[in-house]
Image (cartoon, rainbow, N blue to C red; front, side, top):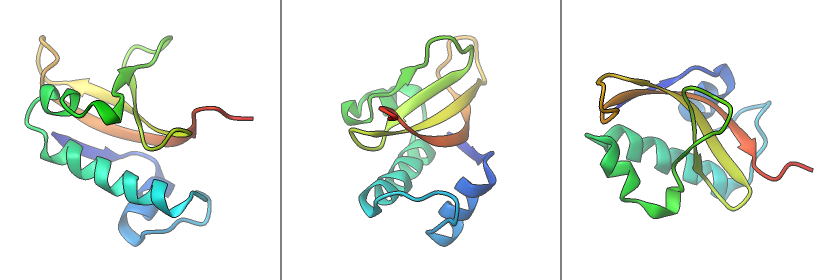
Length: 103
């Protein structure tokens, strides 16, 4: 699958390993890199669904927004531009790392 980092700070984090605006625990950053590699390696959406730990899910209230778990607290949110009608192959546009249980 194709991955696009639409958020400037996520791109900085991905390229340099750190970002001034995104402050996350080291294990969450490591999981971010791991998750991006899993998306890039996936040929079809079923490859991502096979990893139950990611908790890949569509977000309610959005047409194209999905999320994947980075930790119990943090999620990687993205829009997916599907390339076929069956929604098997798509382009992943990574948007943000959100605090799933924000205080």
